[in-house]
Image 1 (spheres, one colour):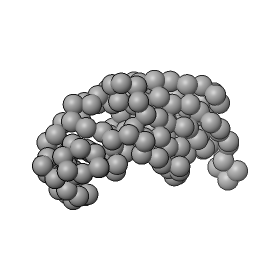
Image 2: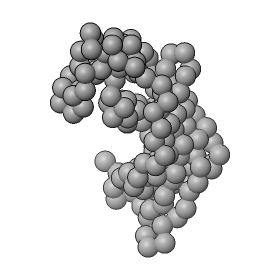
Image 3: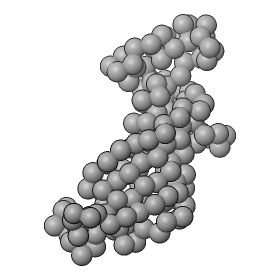
Length: 151
């Protein structure tokens, strides 16, 4: 577990591996983003994408899964926000995604001695090392001195 004190501004990391399936793309789209290029291969072939593609929101959910499965997780208490989301390339069935991160800033909470805020830039890449989505996140992070939230 990495606590607020362990975070170094400017540090980078690469991790995660998530292979996307056609069925998962269509299932997510059916529930949350029912557009033809996410649901129907024939319609997708006639779209600007030329093939079935994952919803951008599905891609963000896959990124979150890789963050949650990270081998050395951050002692995050909650997400505070996501900014500057940019979908840069489509995600297609068979793509294997991974993450690249950089810590942009951190600051101690002014109101709570047991919390701090960490902002990171995140890029999700496909198997060809193309960025498919980039964004910045800010997390509320536990300080080492206070383990009351540790599970």
